[in-house]
Image (cartoon, rainbow, N blue to C red; front, side, top):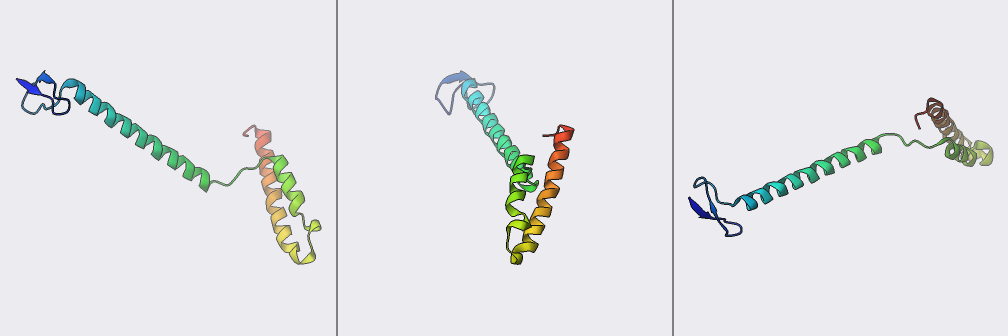
Amino acid sequence: MNASCRDCGARFEARGRWQRRCWSCWREEQDEARRRSAYGDGYREGLAAGRRLAASPARLDAPTLLELIKLVHPDLHPHERFQQANRATRLLVGMLEQARARERAGLT
């Protein structure tokens, strides 16, 4: 049965009354649907990866942690900030130990 493509108007041999597009237009629509789907999949994967990174603790390297420890060490602050500086230093020292362990294990 001869038919006209509803998209481009080209004449083509339809296999039935259900076929309203020529092969080229149908294929183009399928390819576009795949592109949209792949883009959406990539977007969702990227979003999930970003959320995982945001949820994981930051990993600083050992030299940066040493610099931070030097900046917050309690000896460098007035007595009224001793407790805060002490807590921050303890936290950073713990992170430094983890960073060094990762370096020794070759995980960095």
